[in-house]
Image (cartoon, rainbow, N blue to C red; front, side, top):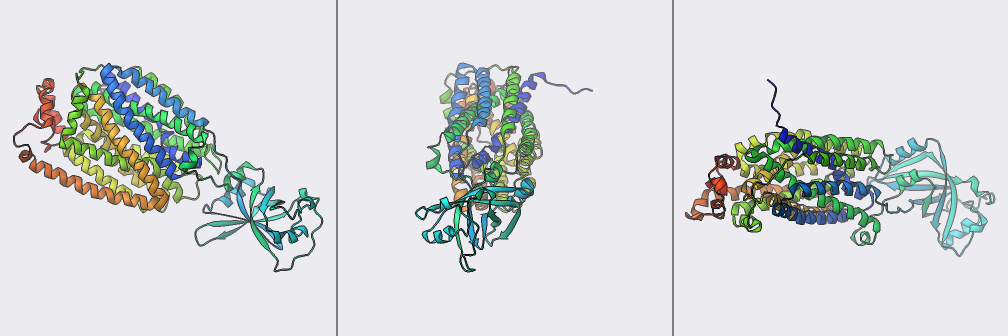
Length: 599
């Protein structure tokens, strides 16, 4: 017997797959791209705080406009185009000019150049890239007055025209053999490379050196190293750490941040309207939402790992080249627009007073707790979205395959975490209820963060990502379905936008800001530890409050109708439907406070 295929659901499945496939190549890598551009963790945290606030304002506004003017599909497709275009334009972000590498020049009979870095892979990268090549480099060094005596005696073989005792700098031209690198390991974990610098053939104007120094005569200074070699400079030059005060004066920052703002507006609208359209198409089969949304996890997982492999494959051992992933996003988002043109969606209800109906949700204690839960989950989600990859890069000095690892992280999150939980979310919510699912998500975040704080080898992060099924798959299905159930008819898109705004605009924005500050002050490991302990405390508090409300609700209401019941009385078509009973079961067996319970 051939399985039946519901053709009406194919366009929404295609949308979830293509939209997530289109954003997967770029969204996870934006914080690390910002780091590569030189922006500090505080700048990144501030940017994502603002982006989340913009998402908070966008989602309910677009949802309200969609419900009020019945223009769901038009706004939906317009925002898909906006998202793809803005992400693609990020590829044209101008880079911030990096300073020349700074090295230590040491002279004691012979001249050596010393460069220290916590990245112990640089020396191997240089040897592999240059083989036995010798580079002619210019050293621009500050010099003290007492050093000129030795310099002018040509012990360093400097051309006579540079022997200007009144100058504060000296320029030396030296040949450096890139295969002859000495290594010194310091106690603080840094690795120092020592190059022997010999007089260059380009320095023929210098007279022959004389033995004018005894063994006790030496000096050292720091110099700018200019070898006219882009690869060497990319390996040795430290990215400038750009803080908030410096970033706002850079046009490169405003281009990058401006494109992120536009793309976030588009994504916020697509997500909130898309979920509302999905629930409208499903109708009374809302419990099947997870089985539609799981196609998004498939798209995200496949194309995130492809993006990671492409970035590593197209990059040298220095900075990562993200050009390919921006083209991937542009092409896939165009396909998403074509798929969305096939969506068949009609709004069956129009609330005469959308804002009033939605506002009544804030009079319910259960709904208020639900909103607070969304905020707290946003805090943890922000830390993972914006700083997990940053943390992994800090743990690894050798970054040759870091983007591949990050791609595998996203793939495991999707295929082994989100996908099974989205597929079984309807069954899980029927078994344990929405309230217990909320507590389980908080507990999952606590475990996940504590494990992150214990990481030493970044590759051990892969098994931890299985928890993403609980912390995102189960969370998102719970949030979207609960919002759909409690939303008065005609306000479904507005309610999805409101819940998304609370989650992202308050939770994610605050988490981004706090996470950036903590990363800068205490480091990644301690930041995840602090968040882990906080989520365990939140789990206990949430569980206790829900048990209290369950036991004392009948006494608290004292026979009076709750705000949910009052709202419910005005919705006769749900009161008289058999689906209300099923939805009651979907919420929770013991969830007697919700408005559907009295339907």
